Image (cartoon, rainbow over all chains, first blue to last red; front, side, top):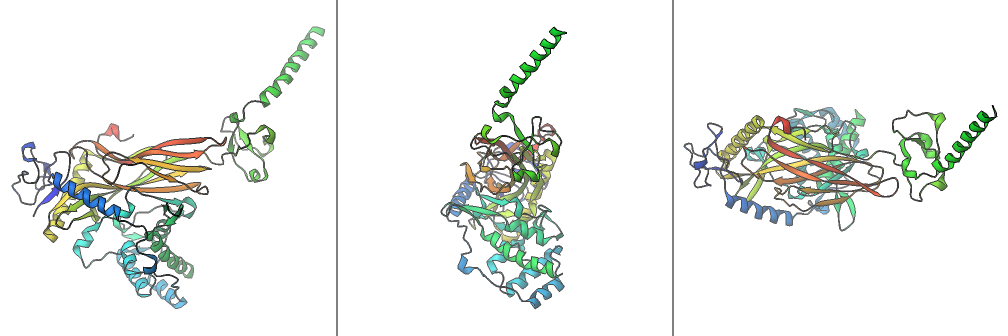
Length: 214
Length: 251
């Protein structure tokens, strides 16, 4: 097992000492000699090239319409009793990650959200340690701008979410912020909400109704 | 006495002659800097120095026939400023042919929001701490999966705020170290987006050893139509730097 680093520079760090290794050791994946196994960041032009090919392929196949509209739930409106039950359990302006996950699960079971949307909305799958550690690259956001009208953004501005270590988050404001961003569709010559923004909009509608029922 | 009177009359006549000449000055010299509700009724509050306090009794109207045909006053001064920069390390796992970001190694910096060009700068010691943290997380991944993973670089997400009465477009070019593409990215802004936020992401690879200073990011221009109908633009730059010395922090 090894850990590698792709760099055009010559960094080769010893994880035990937390210091760069000597120049003579920094000669590539096979040549980076370390006394402790799996203990260094490695250089590898091969891995860099492989990543570039992977990235190019991924960006070529990206579509902003994923999930496709037919896969999305639409027009699911919650009854008053559903909203009341949610209001009893969750505060739209203050949730922990666990509460947020539970809230998303409930919306999924009520048919408001799809499984794919749970991931887009930042549901943390605690059953999988690897999934908690890393997130697959989202090719859809790379080298592509997203625009939001200032009038649509929350007056409180952007606030750090769970991924930045925030323990409690104003989910209503977070959803309002995220749902406002649009991407430019060259075919239709207009700004359209991304699939992530559409997912946040569905959640925002529920949260807004909940806050009005409080 | 007669001489004095003649002299005064001459001065007054000269002054009166100068008034039409001043009125015929190009309208660009007049800038609309204050806005009141009365503006909607067609009244303009004008000031030459730009800092004159609003005085409703001192409203100076611009006569329509003296204005260019396409003259529309600027209701807001155009501005562009980077708001925030978010950084995640990117790794590649050849055995899975997959790239990932490390969830717990994100860094976020809320910028001042008052400068055209601003970076999220990590000092040398902060960079070392960050690299160690990344190494440790990569080690965890390797231990969990048994797969080799390689550090590729950084995924940057930059937010930029733009303000203009008539926004036109924003054009940003990633630095050459952007491996997700270096072509300029140009977006036309809808006319009603007077205050808007633009978010853009890219993956950047180190250009030197990770112990040296380097920066990654986007630079370009925000364009807008000015009051006289001409196109104006303001430069903008934002991104992330590592091993930044104190003197480089304020770019």
